[in-house]
Image (tube, rainbow, N blue to C red; front, top):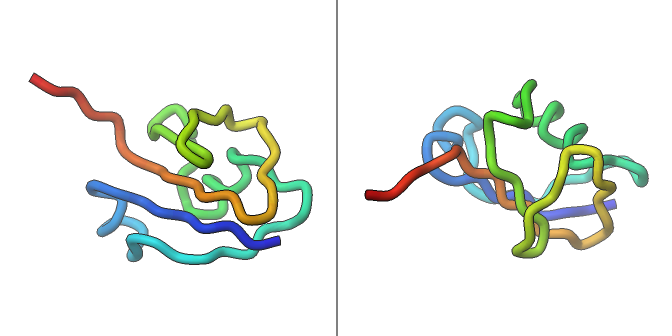
Length: 75
């Protein structure tokens, strides 16, 4: 199945892309996607699916838009 993955902040330079369409296995989870991107610990990033937070063990679906960002704070 196909999803869209967007990364922001320092992840763009680290992963080498800003946004791309990605093929993943049918039963892929958010954590498996992060691992495939080279992010070993999902606690080091904020991950959303279609604008809502997603846990590493949640399954992805065809057409999902996944946003991965480093933690941030304001002030």
